[in-house]
Structure formats: C-alpha cells, structure tokens
Amino acid sequence: MEEKAYKVMSQNGALNITLGVIALVAGIAGGVLLIVGGARLLAAKSKMLF
Image 1 (cartoon, rainbow, N blue to C red):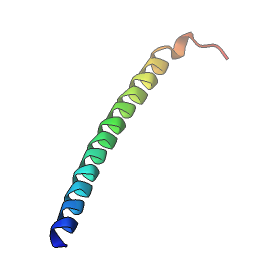
Image 2 (spheres, rainbow, N blue to C red; image 1 turned 90 degrees about the vertical axis):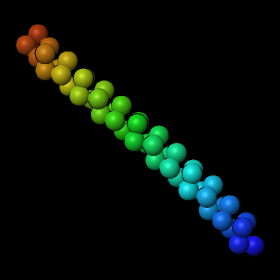
Image 3 (cartoon, helix red, strand yellow; image 1 turned 30 degrees about the vertical axis):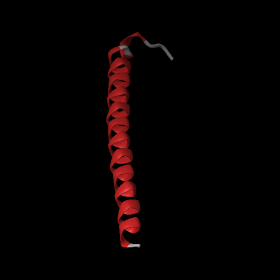
C-alpha cells in the first residue's frame, strides 16, 4: 500500500514541476512580448495622430 502511494505522489510531483516550468516560460515569453510591443508604441508615438 505504501509503495502505491509513493508512486502516485512522485508522479504528481513530477507533473507539478513540469507544469510550473511551462508556466514560468510562458510568463517570461509573454512579458518580453509586452515589453517589445510597448517599446514599438513609444517609438512610433510621434507618428500617431488622434
């Protein structure tokens, strides 16, 4: 019984680590894209008319 519980917990831990790494990479990528988009808007600010 203890071996089965240990196996389930280790699989769950590995899944949590994998999902955490994926979420971290996606967050960093999204942040970089937002910074690049904001920099482009600031660079083109003088060309915009409202």
